[in-house]
Image (cartoon, rainbow, N blue to C red; front, top):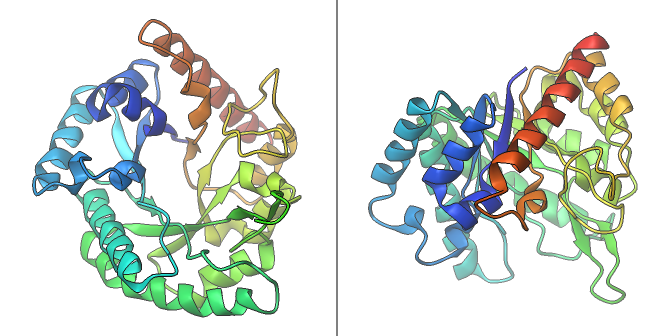
Length: 296
């Protein structure tokens, strides 16, 4: 199984080029290119030279013995404003093109979720919006030969500041989203940390999605109350039962990659400690992959 991790916080600290080198040096097989910083006006991928920049990153990856297996598109993908929605859509389309340039097989595209999520009301409205949204993106996925992966989300209740359900928080809706697009270019990225934030066991979500739908992961842990995005099996913050997660992935014969999105694990590292931190995350990943294989 391929082991990868996102650039995310690393590219914000050290730049895209250096983050790829750090991840490769730690022993990862592949790199998940985060395009989330397209929110910043001066981000390289917002410039007219975005293709050249993407090609340059592909060259650096090859020189360092890794490949770019996945990408994460710009988000949020929806606003209560038509002009902002169109800007977001164009940034996601550019992300799909960039994923094609770098050879990524998947790009994670957040579903629309700007409306308050109330089951039986806005959930149905959001479903219609997302059906249109993802179908608009399909031609670009086909053009650049990249699968888009929808993701299970959460949001804050704005009144009492607690985490509540959002788009695809529950397995039946998550499965329905993948099935309603009905395309080889649509798949699911299960965010394991998001599961527990809304009271779902990741292993149950894995089994519900099953072999055909689930082709990508965001692997990280949290304290069950905040989206901490820390390393699995953390001695300080960890609520996920990783044995059960590994058993479930083995049961469905999961064929995707094992991709970390433990962004916050790197927030306090500096140039002197980043290599050791990245090796530590790598070793955790190899151990969990070995455990998945042992359960097959």
